[in-house]
Image (cartoon, rainbow, N blue to C red):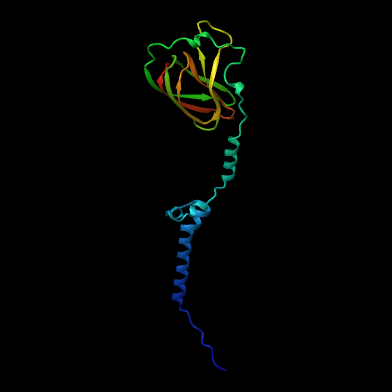
Length: 208
């Protein structure tokens, strides 16, 4: 019977192979596994090769549910826009515009809307005064009614007002051209369980 020759692997070769396998494993772990599975990208390969896109955070489903919930709000009907039909539009709304408007100014105001409550913030404008505005919340969504009240010669119990915009949002930007002299501004309502801060930026012809 002929003898079978077994190939002998040297100890050094085994050690080299083990070290090479360990190094290769570490490279794969750092460059691919960590970005894809845990969102950790220490050397930037996850972003470079697209592995980071495979990572799904544990709270992603919860955040998605919150986002979806925030987008569903009660419908706002046309009847909510302004005073009811029993309140007549005052004659002062048709007064002519003044020859001179307020000097242009710029302000930033923070309004705290308490949890479960509403609050108003208004400025005073002359007829045909112009203004740019921007407001945003620090968190959450608020219901708002952007409206104006006519300045009347005599005080009345039922104040006439017109709504320019009603919606649910966390941000709004626009320009405004006062249709009559009086107070113009926002009613904010916070339906959340924590206070919300609304930061309002104004620029234009108005008085605070």
